[in-house]
Image (tube, rainbow, N blue to C red; front, top):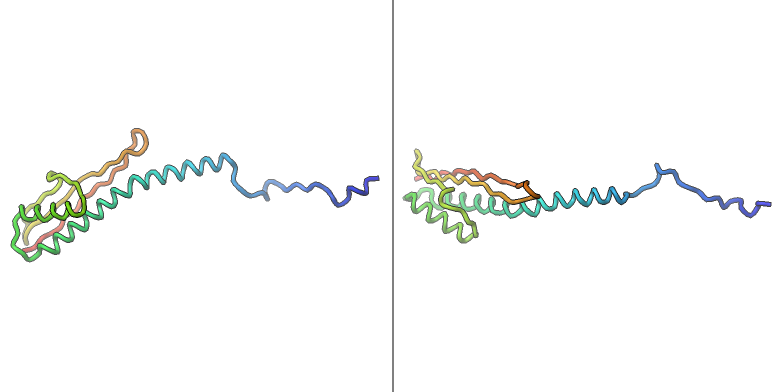
Length: 133
């Protein structure tokens, strides 16, 4: 009597063999990607500014080494490079001091960006280069 049902059974696969992501898993993944992406968006400009400062500091060291310089001429050359690279840094963060072989140029500052609510991202820049006579 039930010969027409043979061979046409509804086959269900066990859950262990199913693949994919649930909606809740997708939401959690989207939040994690968003949090990391937002941090990247906030940090990339700060790292670009650090790269510009490194470039300016190494360029000043190469250009002025072996020349007769004064602290004011070093600061002038440094701010000239800052204006070309569009770096906004106050004079308080730059220290030019005499050293054994010439002058040492020290830049130290903190770059902060708001992240989420009361959470901030901060990069500390602290570099010294030597300008020899």
